[in-house]
Length: 397
Image 1: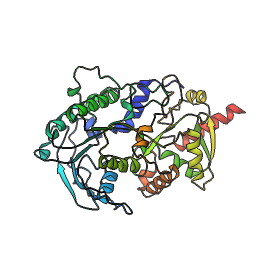
Image 2: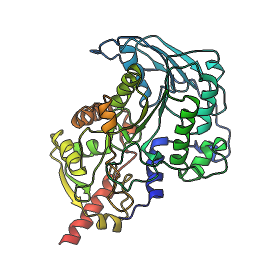
Image 3: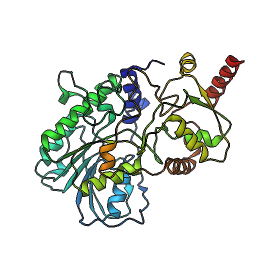
Image 4: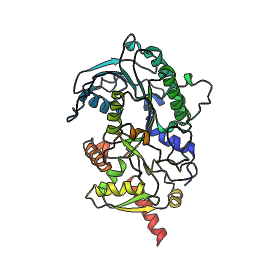
């Protein structure tokens, strides 16, 4: 199944960025005012040792997928937290957290003026201008700047086991500082990787010698609204015959959001600088091993039917979206799912068992409203999967 670098970048970036427009905006209407969102409670984290030295940590963002895990772990470690965001997804934190409001998309960073912190963790940035604006205010005001980037910053996925020295995208547009979220969307997300790579450079420009660049792969676990990993434990837990992609030999990588968040906090405690691929597990993993491991975590008795790549292509079943987590190996994608994580593991990255992530994801998903559970946001619908399997069995007979 030929998958071009542009197609793959579009698929991965679409899920990672999560940009969306309200229907009223698309129709050119002014959306009606909505009531202020109610804070969502965040449970405390027990059994965590206090850090040797408490830090003043500024988190840009903090209310998305990984941010609340960072906050919860940092509070358990005894650190003092300040969050800066638009205040659109309020949380009830299990401890004292200072919350500052602003909007990086409009350049409103006044709340950060004249302040100092030991560390700044930049979670949500896509645009280099956001890093520039933060750098102008925070240069000399923080002792470490952590930029959460992405594996999509790399220019190629062709080489297995490539490490952090691999070439990243070169931005070739007229002016990276003038790019907008709308431009990223209009490009089909082709700009996503190059702008992330350019934002990394901007971070190192404003915070030379004290920058930590973390490049996660597919972030998974309870709370993931994309369902890119969630599809598999939910589908296997439903039982029956399950359509699985390829022959099971293609490499895959994921990182539990909790492992990523907690390791990020430990990285700032240790003042580790440099670039790190944040992918797991700590050992090589194939699609077959992943699904068989998830299969063993349920008592629903699912049965895997592996479907050849050529058949999936014929049936127009897309990798990554219709078959989440998976991308078939090929000349341009032979290194996808096999980025080296040796530097991160040496720096203390640990990964909980994948079965634990799956069980926790299932528990979280089961607690969602019925309308949320009615239709997964990635993977095959039951009807399409049934038709796909029927076509395969008809072909075999």
